[in-house]
Amino acid sequence: MTSVRPFRDIKRRASKEISVGEVKIGGSNPISVQSMTNTLTTDVSKTVDQVNAIHEAGADIVRISCPDEESTKALEEIVKQVNVPIVADIHFHYQRAIEAAKAGASCLRINPGNIGSKDRVAEVVQAAKDYNCSIRIGVNGGSLEREILEKYKEPCPEALVESAKKNIALLEENNFENFKISVKASDIFLAVGSYRLLAKECDYPLHLGITEAGGLFSGTVRSSIGLGLLLLEGIGDTIRVSLSADPVEEVKAGLEILKSLGLKNRGVKIISCPSCARQAFEVIKTVEILEKKLSHIKEPMTLSIIGCVVNGPGEAAQTDIGLTGGGKGNNMVYLSGLQDHKVPSDDIVKHIVKLVENKAEEIRKSKNVTN
Image 1 (cartoon, helix red, strand yellow):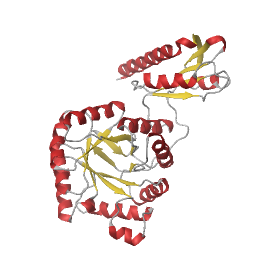
Image 2: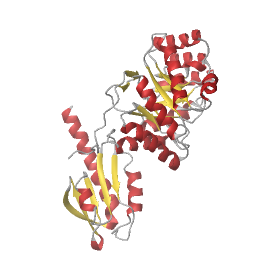
Image 3: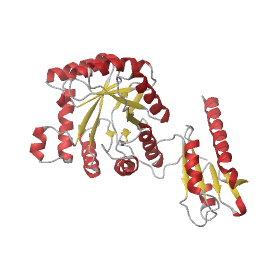
Image 4: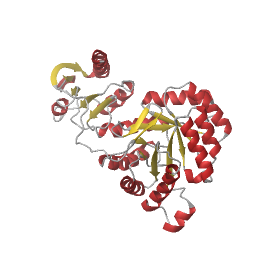
């Protein structure tokens, strides 16, 4: 049985391939998930701990803010202590970008038009070349160039894309193509419209995001709508879900978006029913506990937790492990879509966790034999 199956074939937009450290972005490579630290970069220990937590949650790339020289000095120490590509977040001072490249950043997040003259842009590009560093052009609906805002009167897809193309030209003039682009906005329609237009205008890889999306719940919903629309159209090569929440939650949300579209295979995908009067056990509480207890599982598999026999057998037939509520506290467990044995309601969590961990071990052993 296939553990994770897309509900439709998604034809990816053709794009160039770039490298962010050892992570390949664009081309036929898997869509990567990113997040950003919120610790003070100068606090090396806390930042390293957070980078590691973000990476362990499933992030392929982590971004770190470098607003001053002290931060770029700290970045050098941080890079030595982590095993994930680091993007240095630079906004205005070109020297910070050069320092970050020297410090070992795998990518520089900049807006070339904001860091000064063409000579300064050329210096940053040369540093990126010298230290094998990629660049992300970061265009944002909230910080467009004055002349572009004056031309369009307000942020709109045409304005964001014109800003992006202007910055693309600055890098291309320096014979540099190892870059990706984002055209983010907090408004879903503005962001989606901008990415759709940019996708037609160039073949560079695109970094997707609904910027400043909001808190954990509302921001996840907004990001799921915006990113989901674009990803379904084959647009997007790497994503960040921007939440006013723990960065680990951003990674979880990003992975769930990709898993829901069949674009990422990592961890346990739980299919569960809403609570209703037919439930033979406490579905909501059970799923809440299982999500926490199974968060360490990296191997891809599907798990259905259904409270009754109305939809349970059908869902269980489509998942690696299934549980359907039964009468008198006896619930049916399905393995590979087939009825296998029963489990009492009081033992559900412990039993399911054991089954999932055993399945994960089987997958690991199978991979080792194949390799």
